Image (cartoon, rainbow, N blue to C red; front, side, top):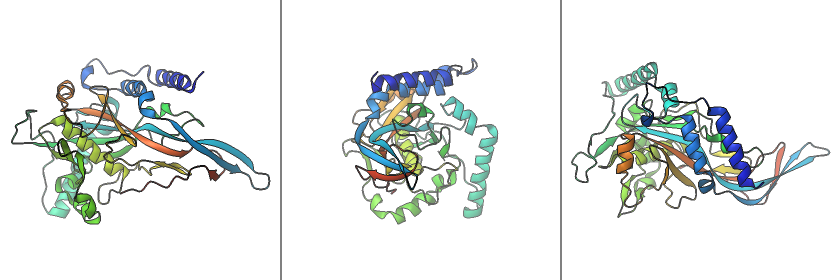
Length: 347
C-alpha cells in the first residue's frame, strides 16, 4: 500500500469515527453553516494537492546515556491545515456551527462588551460603539462607502487527523483552541492603538506591505485591523482573515492575548511558517471551505468572489495550510539532522 493510500484510509476512518453523528439541527438552515464534519471533508479533498510532502533528510535522536538507543526519523517538509479562520458580518453569525456555540454564546458576547466598555472608559474616558457589519452593502465596482468591518476568529484546526504518528509532522496547534478573537480585541481594533505601537516598533513594514500587485491590490498587510477599504466583501474578508492570522502567528504586542498561543515550532530542529502574504503559496495556502471549496490566492487579479459572497451571505471560513519543516520527533535527545532548520522569526 502506498503512502498516499495509507494517508487517505487513515483520514477517512478518522473522519467517520469522530464525526459520523455531527449534523446541523433541523431548525438551522444547513446552507448558512459548516460543521466539523463538513470542514474535515473539504480539507481531506485538498490533502494531496496542498500537503506538498517532501523528504529532505534524516534525523537522529539519542535515548539513554551509557548505552544509548538511537532513533532515526525522516526530516520532511509538508503543509498542514492547522488553523481555521472564520470571517463574518455580525455577532452571532459565525458560519462555523460548533465554534459559534463554543465562543459566541449570549454570555460570551456580554463579556466581550464588558471588555470593550471597560477599556474604552478607562483609557479614553468614554465608551465607544461596537463595530460590525459593512459600511458597504453593495458589491458594485463604484461605491463611495467602501469600508468593510469584519468579525474574525482564528481557531485551532480539528483536521489534525491528517497527521500520522512517526510518519508526518504533528500539528502544533490545539483543536478548537482560540488563537485570536476580534470581539475580545475590539477596543484595540477600533482605536488602532495596538497597531500604532506595532508600526512604531516595525517602521519598515509600513513602507510597502501590499496584498496583491499594483494592478490588483486587495489591501495592505499593515495595519492589522479588521476594517478594510474595498467595495468587495470577499476581498475584505480575505484581507481581514490575513490580518487576524498574522496577529496570531507573529508578534502581537498590545493586542489582547488568548490562552492558546502559536510558538511556530514543531519540536527540535523543526519550524512552522508564520502567516504573511505569500504569493508563491510555498509556505502558506489559503483554502476556502465555506461557502465554497477552493484554494484562494490573495491578490489574484479578477477574483472578486461575487458568487462566494452571494452564496455565503458575506460569511466565510478559511483553512490555513502552513509549512512544517524539519525533524519528525522521536523520544530522547536530538543529536543530528541532515538539514539545519532555524527557528521561525516572528516579525
